[in-house]
Length: 407
Ligand code: ADP
Ligand code: ASP
Ligand code: MG
View 1 (cartoon, rainbow, N blue to C red):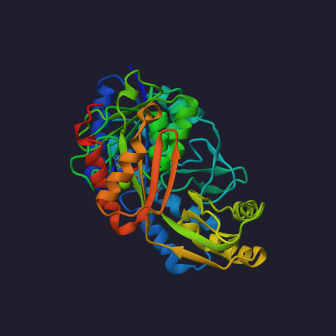
View 2: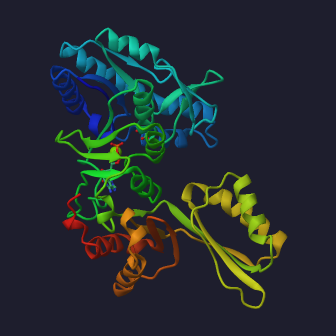
């Protein structure tokens, strides 16, 4: 008998039929003797629709009201899932984030969990009920409803698994696990049976949407076993694990792409100590999240500094750069919205030279120009033109023979 926290994403509870299938799955798990706690996302694309609605009504969209609005999506879903369980004779109760004991900070739109007081969930379990908890929400230390951010339901599930000391946190989604690349782009992508936390973190940081990065960090820090799997075929999926003896045998495990960033170049920057420090301090103070940075060799005492930022933070970044350009005497600020970041990830590259060379050669052989490069111990990322992204993913997946992977 195991205690399982099972999280269902938007597509997995997207319509009444799906909700009934999820309830049937819970019945099967209980027959097997498992105890289950469910964490549910808003149905289908409901979160996007609520965001669009807010945009249609309001220009300034106050954070407190936005969180009240967005969390309504999950609230609707938990009640429906709980009703479907009742129909199958399974005693169940739905809980908002607040009722489930999720206490967060006051940062609306992207609140951080500060405590999970799961007594009520524990009591429900002990009484033989199936708790159905709303994902991605909590109550702030100021007693307001908060939203944990996009993808926050994965974090709710992991945090609850930890608080309940569950045997595993199962993230049910619309694919059968974590793949060697996005299966929507490369149909021959393979599901991995297991992946290390380090690799999974690099993949999510490089743009892989599943599981949400914060949930992987949380699971890693608190040793929560994670299992990413299908809510459609119900077959075993991908385990995210601490270390595997054979993991370093594979050179590259995955190709990841990210279209969420834009590139900013501050050109004609005087090449003297303190200039980069000043610019990036101002960006940090404005809460702008910088990813890749490149500074060119200076010519005639001036240089160019380029960096990438999420599209959602481009306006703040530009405001800071324009202001700083005046102060430091830079010539101009240029933006490029149409970039993509393509990354290869694998623990095996630590001990194998030539991974970067292969990546650059493959891109070159396909006429794809590299604009920026960054690396970590187990990842190499290149910024390229957005139009080349799908092709780059495909040719790199082929070059590293990821369709043959057996891990
Ligand atoms: P959910 O809504 O269930 O929380 P998401 O929609 O956020 O899940 O993420 C699942 C999607 O992520 C899949 O439909 C898949 O197309 C996409 N995806 C992109 N890259 C990968 C990858 N390497 N492995 C698995 N899925 C991926
Ligand atoms: N429904 C929210 C979103 O789409 C939270 C989640 O599903 O994780 O971001
Ligand atoms: Mg989805």
